[in-house]
Image (cartoon, rainbow, N blue to C red; front, side, top):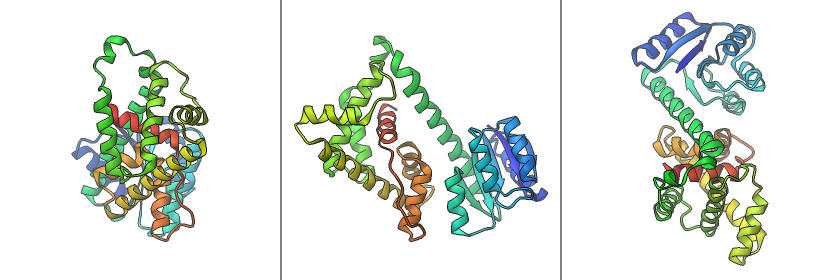
Length: 286
């Protein structure tokens, strides 16, 4: 991966650059110590990862990231700062950072975070590829290599178990919805399917009220988000948290749920049912 380091302390830039080189994490293609200049170089170089200080001359790291996101920049952001202000940290996550690292820099922490960002980017790329192309044009021969229905079912049940919703009434409905989405994507349907159409189809097949199905699904996914958020509070770097927080949910919403549980936020994280269903299919197919 290519990195940009945005930090006004030259010694800290040097430390981070040395860590990246020593652990063969990628190549530092640009660095600077000014928030306004950083906006230019990140736009120009389009690094996969930018490590950004919160407090910068010109404009702070949060404002910098906000402007870059508005421009459509897809760089992953890791923020470093001495600040422990929960308000600032929450705002940074809302602007779209992937991780927040407290100074002084800890070598093992920054190596671990960078590797997790790399894995997260890989997962997003594969998910995008699956939803946009592969499922539409898969040939009969290649479909033979896909997991059979029983294998997929067992994998999904294992995921439900990890999420703590295996016993929820909505878990069965989620599985049924995922099968409908899978059939649409595999059959070449437009990926902009409407959830209400799936609910209607499931309602007719199962003989259940649409509203009841929708409420069950939302309740089960909301509980899954709460359980994943609690896992993140207990162990931010656990494999399950890293896997499910970004694949099944919007990460900033997970952060909001974590803040709510800890009494540091006034509202819960929001669920994205389409993302959950497509993420579930991706994990079941791996």
